Length: 292
Image (cartoon, rainbow, N blue to C red; front, side, top):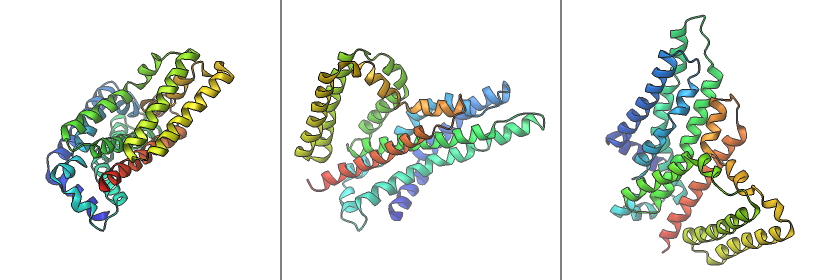
């Protein structure tokens, strides 16, 4: 894993992608920092991080688009798959390399509250705890997005498709709260959506693992449970899907830190769980290609 990590990190250091993404992130957050905190005197740097969330839509696809797809396109993935490094080690090595590049601007962001304190003087108030907790959540959120980008990159050999696919998924996550608000709140609407989700989960498992029996069992089992629960008491399904999906708001976790000054432990755990799940699925995608 260390060899893969050093190789990927050197690739970012010697290429333009890493430098461009770091500069872009610094520029975006720096503009909000200057506008909100330095010029208008807003005492919390956390709000600048929240309003700069759109930078993920550009920086993460650029960072992740070539991580897996380039090796597959150049057929160098065969060398990696036959090397002593395990598939898990390869995926983690690449993931931590991208995460290291992402961590560079995050470390520099940590100086912003200190700059605010110097500018405000001894009488000025700066919310250090809120700012640094929000920065930690910002980093964890970036890790979750990076894991999604790596999964998309592993599923294709085209860097363009990987970048566009990652952008599309991150855009959906960015607009998640608005999308959820348009979902039906009726019992029948939630029932239909859950049936569709059950079928989609089965198809996704089949495409990632080729374990047909497992895919049919999981997808069919979820569908049967959904139908049974609906027949027992349909009132359980009223607003069920919107209520469930609202708990998976990635940007909402950061908003809790930045705006409401709440250390959202369940939200952070959700982001870490998503990161682990995406990396696990990435390993399964590569394992499937390895044996086919």
